[in-house]
Length: 282
Picture 1 (cartoon, rainbow, N blue to C red):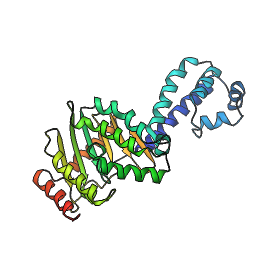
Picture 2 (cartoon, rainbow, N blue to C red):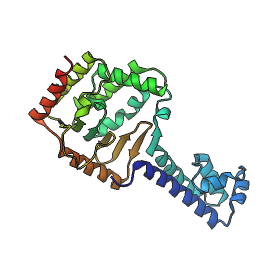
Picture 3 (cartoon, rainbow, N blue to C red):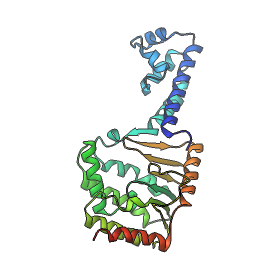
Picture 4 (cartoon, rainbow, N blue to C red):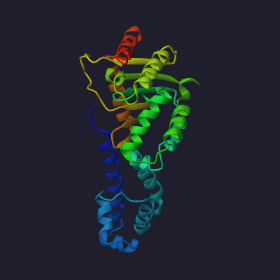
């Protein structure tokens, strides 16, 4: 997979630090002189220049003013915000509960024409039933210790998922077969979720592939990722959501998706795997 999105986020922040350092050098200032002009502790400018402390918007503006290049501030502030959005901890995203995250991402779902989704752990959000989503989101809330707004979050998730049934949206989805067996809800809810997958497979805008346990891998199991057209890839880790917007990295994820697709069962063969999982629920 090459360079990880986390390393890209770090590289983006390092690039901002380097541009600030260069502005300081061009102005003929030392770190101590710059800190003095900005009214900071003497070590702050050094931490920012070395990429140890991410600068705030105000820090960037003060730095650029001190260096006599205030016109640089707007671009650097925008670049810093982009870098910050590349790697966002779930703890921060969910600090006020889960509902707002779904509501905030709804416009992205609505404007996306083609979704490519790879899931190695749970059923993708846009395919989840209310009961399955409730079990999953309650587990997430408990694990993260964030405010419990599960009922409202499920409503928001289902509202966001209407894109599957409304508008001109296409969905190419790959699920590792293990996803069909992971119990994030009770057996009755799991059975309903698997039944829903069987129904959704019949939709003309949904292509669902199951990567079987026995597949000879050319791409190893990855963390779940969602590709929105060719504009953005959202990668879900245990601690954070990583948003990939670099064209080169997006191409890498789409290439991985294409290769993973080669392992997937579709049509009757995929339905058989889902039915087999359903049969284990009794």
